[in-house]
Amino acid sequence: MLKKVIQVAFLFIGGALGLVFLPPLYELIHLSSNPWINNPYISVALGATLLFVLSFGLSDYFVRLITWMEDVLSKVPVGDLLFGTVGLIMGLSVSALFGFAINSIQLPVITEVTPIILSIILGYLGFRVGFNKREEFVQLFTKSGPSAKKKQGEQEAKLSHKLLDTSVIIDGRIADISETGFIEGTLVVPQFVLTELQHIADSSDTLKRTRGRRGLDILKRLQDERQSKVLIVEDDFEDVSEVDLKLVRLAKKMGAQILTNDFNLNKVCELHQVEVLNINDLANAVKPVVIPGEDMQVVVIKDGKEQNQGVAYLDDGTMIVVEGGRSYIGQAITVTVTSVLQTSAGRMIFAKPKDD
Image (cartoon, rainbow, N blue to C red; front, side):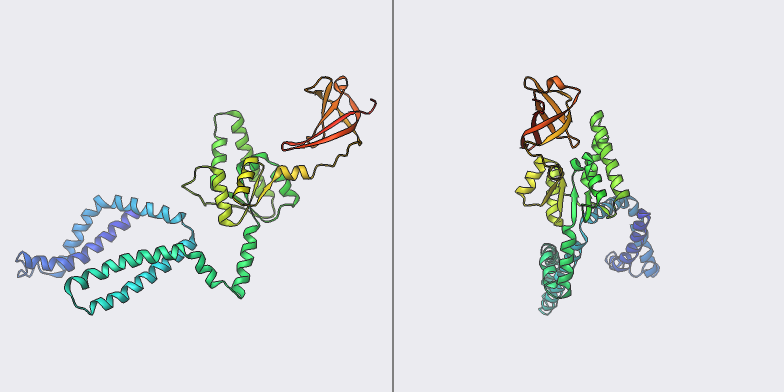
């Protein structure tokens, strides 16, 4: 369809060019005295036919050019295009004023060439200024009054955005936490995170493939069960290859928080001063408090690393090291907590059988 439109455009442009340029050409080759050839309808028909024939060879290149421009423009945010266009219009307006002043000089070469050069230079500069200064223009028009309140509301809405990384989606606990209603705002999933999930789900490794499909299932569950919406954004940063760095830049751009359980991403966010919510920190915070000297009922599952140790686990996965518990493997016993060790990997409880 696009190719046909381009060919029709070539047809009309060829007719217009034939009407303008063929009569002078007739005079140059001494054919202007021929009334049949000098007919304007003949000039239009010749120009249209010539360019229409050329369109069969050139239309494919124009289709590729238009498709490429469409892809580029579709990735540019609407605000950037708007302010860039405003700057372009201002630049062309200034160049038109200069053009009027130059035309008054009435110098043959200068009056013909200079306005074209000024239009190109000032139009480009206007577009770049409007594109680069868009945030300052927004602040200028939303400095006070109802617009300021609206902007404040938009900033609060941005702060309620929470970006999900790949690890927290695969982990799956985010769906359970979201279902309880403890997470407010909009969950945002960037397209590059979805792409990474898809690559993991298509992996030849069975474990990776299972993890990737689990992540996609968790996203589907979030969309189906969550009361607040799950937003998928197309923003991407072509100059950055690492997904974690893309998340950090997107969080800065949106003023959003990052939801993760990745310890390294947590540190990177702290370095970039991006607010991060770590699911592991939440899990450690809601674990029941255990005090030395407290008794608890546990089942010793296996032996420990040290001699005569046994290992048990709480319902939340906290490991309990039972001194002298090897002889109680497979039994439910009452133990007394002797100490609690908090590590970066979680919490570890040391205890001994109460009978001892």
